[in-house]
Length: 161
Length: 421
Image 1: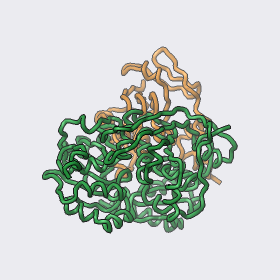
Image 2: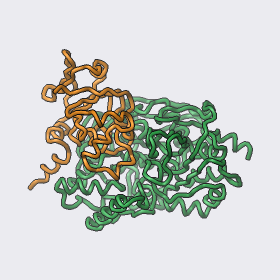
Image 3: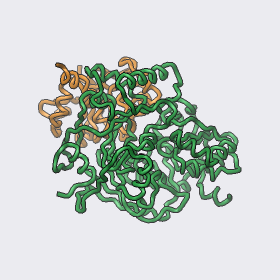
Image 4: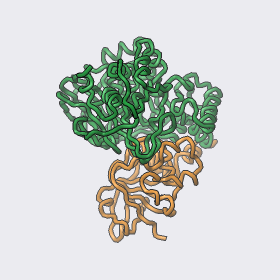
């Protein structure tokens, strides 16, 4: 099925992505998914589908270092986030969660709610309807973490005797 | 080639002669700080296959986020951490009651010039006030460093913020920080290092420099830094645990951006709901009625902040219908404020004094808000839902502005109530 696109604005902070009041009380992946973006769009967690893509403005994920913000989106089914820019810690957390996060201003501006969007990591392009947008390749270390499904899996592999 | 402070520290730690912005380096941090999230980190650590932390002497755990535990779940969380710390021989474990991690770490003398500290908390930027390179990371990353002793970091470009002019009390470091964030935006320093400089910064006390660096996180900074000087040495002389080698940017270092801001005549500033960069001078606000006022947190819970609040509220009383919460950042601060009489003054004025910790700042306990309520706080974040309710409004300001507002029940310019004192 074609992934759907969720479009949000600038400065989407971690408190609206995953409220602070849950950071020590909710840890089950399914439960976390139910609270994803709760304080911004209460319909999101109910209707998001596996593979959906989030498209946002600048400074996505600003605020707290809580990585549950990235994990909650991943557990909710989000397959990637394309934003004009990411807050630094959120970007790292997304990669560590195995969630693709790409910065691309022109691409964000070209996407509408009805756009068909796909991310091709092997060619470093985002496909929007009939257009392609190239993005800078991920550094080797980052790509390795992404390809292995996240930091947990990456370290587990590293520590294996 | 000339390098900035951040480039120099990252190069030294990575064993390289030279680094430049954008480069990825792998290194072993000097110190790793975690708080209540150490329980979740220890679980991820185990899932990763971690047997023992690579070096217990580099790990610091300070319980502060929900202390004492508000529910069974929080209590179990703390218990898990106590057991983990004991098992791993983590000597630098600070149990419930010491205070907020960022304050306690500094009071205990861990934040020293030139050191590289990572913390699983976004306001880890605070230690730059002592000339350290300090940045926040996520829980999984902390677990990975505990297990492997190593982490990759991208070398950030540096934005130099030069503050000129002179501050006139009660306008203070918090007003400067809010003003700068209002000008640069919530992503104004995204993925960059911030170096604060200029005569305003040189004149600032350590507590004020901690405010600047703490708030650096709110403009997206990776780390914030104030060049260490005599004040830093003096502060550390009573507390340092080891020697240190201060690091300064080289003359001719390449700053990505230099921003000069004249703060002469700066009015008290307020960040309005729901973003920290939605800043206005207090005079521009139209009679905003408040239900709760909070003086404290890792941003403004230091002795100097309690002193200002006490001076404004001495022999006066908090407005009827308004609650004032006072949250000292550490036990040491609470004890000193007791000796100085600030706590008695604030209690007599009707304040509710909370135990040192994060309190209601992140919406976990001890003063969360109800729908429709308005709070003015000295904290660093006013995001929707931050204090536990997504239909409440949070304004951010200096301790003087918050105390003055508690006194009148509406957001108030502290200069007005000081004039009448």
